Length: 388
Image (cartoon, rainbow, N blue to C red; front, side, top):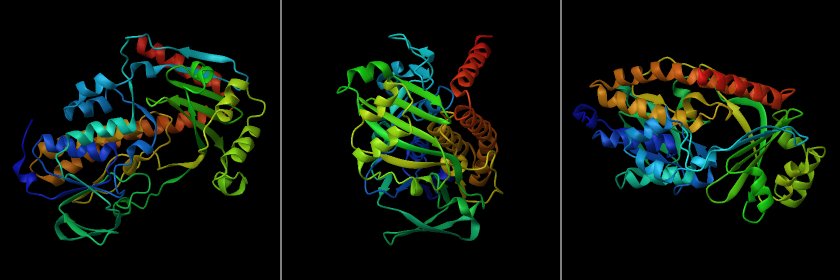
């Protein structure tokens, strides 16, 4: 562990208190570098944003090691969450991978809220400030930025880092690129696994993908005993506004959603029938694959703010945490903060472009014709590569 006294005299502002922002602040803290995280919500809301996350050995786990939390993570992670089952709409099974009891794979699961609690508990009090929604960021001389928040506060930072997600307020200071609709819309449902043991048995302990007709039913068991279900549609961006499904009337909404899967196997339809009265529609957005920007002093981006992609490479939170580690280590290892940012950005562009391309390729494969067959073939090819 190093302490960089020059960087420690600078005021570092991190916009966004998700896994990426929290990881960045914690690794900086371990190197004796102070930073403040500004989070728009009035309190930590990570438990409500997203479900179970698989944390990869070469990215998310690497970041947790740098944060001093890898052993704590391994003690609570769910290795059985690596179960994976793949079906087509008829219920024909193409893959049925089960993690052995006690087996430790390289992608254990943890709920987003539990992961963020782990990070929050290790941060020094006062590091994160809630109720700070960024409304404007203005560049000043020497790479400094004046940050305006909707609570009336203004902050001047020597280095500002956007960890503020898909619709980052800081991204426009670096690039004209905007998040665009990916062609996919999801409707999130929740099934209580304890209340429906047959559904829980069908789902197993990890993920189920059912793919056909350019649609999908994707299900994932979370640590709280709930199965998060994502009904996935390849539709126009306006579909949520024109489909006439009353998403605020769950019983009627679920009946209409069932009609979209009326010829799918009953165990798959039951994800909709057995779901609770909470129906959450959302569009999936992405940034251009391989996005780069002209470097500017005193500002950079991590996570979705830098390289938003669809969830079909399984890399979202892992990339955000890897970005956090790479940037923190660059800052700790350079006396010149500007050189640190440039070193980070050069490295980040390379690995994030690869993941963004995989994500886009997988999206197209999973929601095309013969999706289950094609995804099984892709997994077989990957297994062969790893076995060599």
